[in-house]
Length: 385
Image 1 (cartoon, rainbow, N blue to C red):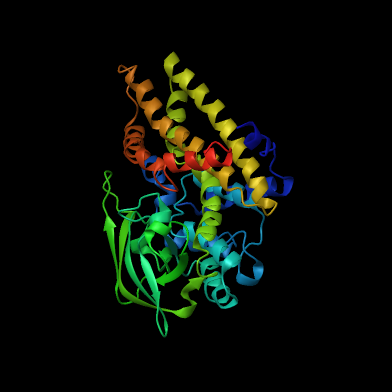
Image 2: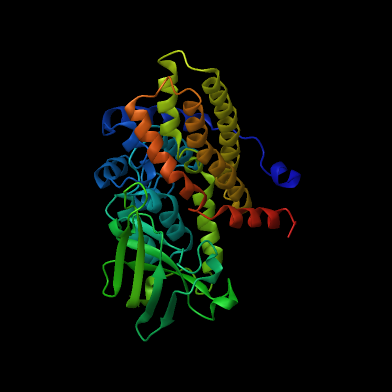
């Protein structure tokens, strides 16, 4: 662990990115839809295409992509600031989230010139939205065992298989699917590729999945003899495992892996300030402050690596694992503190927010890789397995 932590040097957000924070705050004060905390706590699952397009008009979708494609051409620190401010207030960012964070950068890094021209400007304008086709019913977070298969045809590819737990898949236009193009699931990482799938094509069926909270932001996707053009392939055939790991480094490292419960935390703190609360509440607040400050600094250190052009796969897994623990602890410890003082019940908005986040919190350690998978990656990075 010492070697891994030594590789994560203390870093700070540069002055230019800090100055950008004021611009983002001013925008949100004007443009953020008014909503109670229980709705704002859905932030990066909430699909609001109109709000995403407002961001796009500022150059804040595809914020790290080059200006030639309509992106903001900002560095990873500026994206950190933007994401942190959006999540802190519970902005509805689910529509553009994947395209901005993963699909756009993936296409820019590995895609062909034609793919960049076709997709990146539309991502940056908020005209098209992407989802991720990774998990499968019989594979879960073990991505190397995916069974969805694409075979070569005279005109391109024929795709068959199934994906599940795809966030907002039933509302998106495209999916970048991790599929097997050679070999069998027993071959593990070998033979995997990534394909861009137009979800309106014949043979594609997308069904929403209603979760415990009553929302339907997950979906399952079925591919039945879907005909794809030859240029649906991202990068080189067989390089899917390398590419998906680079993609997951973007997904796992940012403040989105710390702030899933932040709207609840803020609502609870506002309630604490409104009266004379018990010592249990104050102790819990201090614990949260210390934990979050440390995790945020760790995430900034990983952001510095991304800004330097590195691909910190293991370090990102560490941030995601530790961040998930914090996100899940927030509703659990707030519930315990409130239950410790039943004579002082919270207001109705806080109760609704706490109920929603408590229901969703178990998913935090599933999305982006389960805790077991991440800890296996960390162990390998430390040379322990």
